[in-house]
Image (tube, rainbow, N blue to C red; front, side):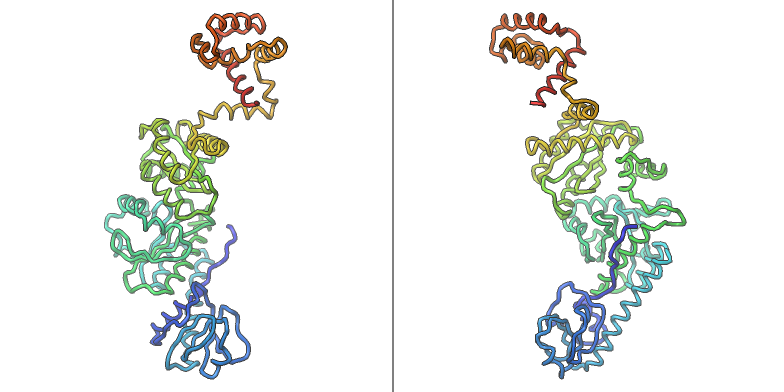
Length: 509
């Protein structure tokens, strides 16, 4: 499992103030500290200051000595300083210290109880039950496919009645998921690294959520429903800690099996990279998509023309792709949006795909690579490679065209594979080299004449117009070329060889 910095249940100044008020202390924040976290408290004696992440309890006699300090403090009298300050009137320093110690001790105890479960490799259901006890509200964890991974028992009392049950798993109803995808406020919840409160749930329930991030990959969400008591500020820090520990458990072996938890995105990534997932995983994926294993599939990759960290724009694009391709599978990974389409379920031609992609490419400053159709999930890795090659070509062209199909660069890709065996100049048809040499020595124009003749499908009038010569002159040149290079233009294989050779010579400059 990758190394990650462990979160701790360290409250902010705002959280401490709220907990003091809950304990009967009338407090207000005189100066803010933002999201700065604190791990403890101690009395300020006038000599020396603790670490910056320790709150100072300042009595009336020590106010003068503390004045101008950058440290945060709690005091019964106004304190002049640069750090944050909680003001609790009519309280002795010892009473304030005792109350603060109770808060920090409770935080340490909750963190210890959670870690005890994690380090003995408990299951996620147990973590949810403990989280529900500590937060005094029902809790659940769902993955990036809205599949319920675990929940506390009490959640059944507040869960919508139309949740779908399948093999002990619960799925958020499809109708609700579609509402989520098209909801702008919900869309922004994907980018948060800290816990937030969401008031706009379709069921009218106020929820606290913390996203499960594995590096830059969104793995799911821990969700707390406001049911038994109103949320408090400290609940957000507790939810963040629970979310991280949940991700740790997901990364451990589950139910005695030596494999990490895998979402549907993991299954799709296996297929895209040519790895065979477990048969039951692939079957579940196809069942959820309503696809069959041998249907015609197509892959598209989209990437911003300007590299940047994943943010609201990426998730807005993700949502727009769901609206443009509602029956597709959209995966966001490694700064790229990957769209899988089932051509047997959607009658989409290449012009139609380009028409759908053009507004997105324009509005989001994207390039897109489009694969050729492949047959079945077993060939998705080929489509994934083709879309990458086409996307790289779009970047290479640098703005000339936004969306490139693989068919437009297949010949270039095929020839690029031969460079390891021999230089491309050795693949050029000898007839063309003979014409080029004759032109150089005699001052003729046989090479350009043949080039125009082949590119215009051997049509005499059109070729003559392109070359701005009389058709009689063209016919004369064609007869003379036969004597110089013995070209059989009636053989389709020779014509194909000549066309490929022309392409090589053009690309070589």
